[in-house]
Each structure stands twice: as C-alpha cells, then as structure tokens.
Image (cartoon, rainbow, N blue to C red; front, side, top):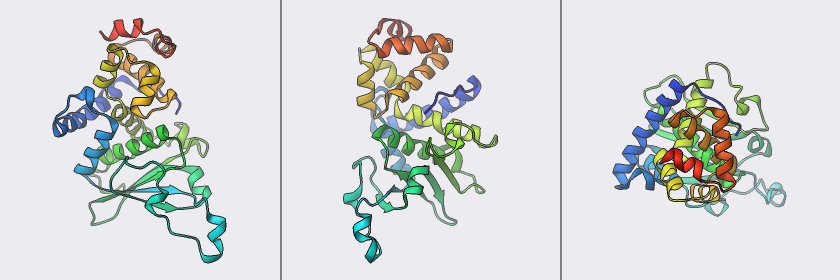
Length: 253
C-alpha cells in the first residue's frame, strides 16, 4: 500500500478512536498495551460483535470438478488457519479474487456483520484486510442505517485501491486504513519494540506485516507522534531498516 499523508487533525482523531478500542482490549485481556497484538484485537472484535468471516478463493481443483457443477469449499481450504474463529470459505471466480481485497456488509433486522476477505494474498496483506474491514464495523457501521456495505479493491484492480476514492469516501477509507495500521501495531507496542532493540525484521515477523507496511507505520509514528518532518522520518525509518537503531531509539526514549 502506498504511503498517504493525512491531515494531522484527522490522524489524531483516528488515533484517539483506535486507542479507545485498544484500551478496551487491554482491559479485557488484562494485558498492557505493549503486549496487545493484532490477534488480540481480532479476538476482541469477535467477542464484541457478531461477525462471520468468509474467506474468498478460487478452487485449485476447479477443472476436475467443473463437469459435476464444482465442489463445496470446506475448512480444509482455509489458507491461514487460526486468525479468526467464526469463519468459512467460499469459492468464487478469478475475476472477483483479482479485484476484491475485502468487503463488509450487514442485512436488515440483523446484528450480524459478514466480512468477506480475499485469502489469495500474502499473510501481511490478509491481516491488514481483516483489520481494515473490522475498522469499518467499529467506526462506520454503528449507528449508521443508510450505509450497509463497504468494499476494498486490490491494488491492481482499480484507482480506488491507490487512494483515488470518490471525494466523499476518501476520509472513510483513510480512517479505516489508519485504524487498521494502529490495530496491527499499536503505538505502545511499537515504542517498546524499538526501545528493547527489536529489529525491522523482528517487527515484520512478530506483527504479521510486510516490510512496506512497517515502513509506513514507522513514518506515521514519527510524523504524528513526534512531529518529525516527513523527509526526516523517511531517513530515520530507512536507517532503522538497515540496522542503525540509535536515532529512532533516541527519539522514542
């Protein structure tokens, strides 16, 4: 995902919302924020809301079963197991999987949220998609009766995924992206990781994030939490990625 600068006032509002939810999760699990992971966040969402996750995929045995009308997906077809509890798999077309990253919807007179997630991606992207869709539930569905669906497109499918949303949707997607990033790696967990000598690769491995996502997270962390100019934030994040930790540690300390 490309880095997108967000107005500071908007970011701080999104950050406050994320911290409110994270504080609830911290209290629920009786853990400090520095130990709250994205898995805790997902677990708490499932405790707080009625959610069914449907992982979308293309049947790799489609050619063998086409003549008998295809086959039904089973839990054995889940690519990444243990990320969520209430889930199933649904086979769909390659066109859908090549274009859709995630989608959340509700039905009238029901408190259940259906979260569709494309599982034909790397784990880091899939985790971000899950938390992006959950962020819509937290920030955009509650109390809202008119909007019943949000969809996120793959980066090669549409201008929507590169940040060119219709003007009225851009703030909503900015907020969902920001919340998802903070849910993946919250400020206190990131700060503790830096101060205890965790490497850039440690952050990737321990938080189910790609290198690009960690870079964006570090830039936001430095720009919005410490008022570092974006050019300097990029340099500091690059130094950290290359194993030079002193500068970022001296800022965070």
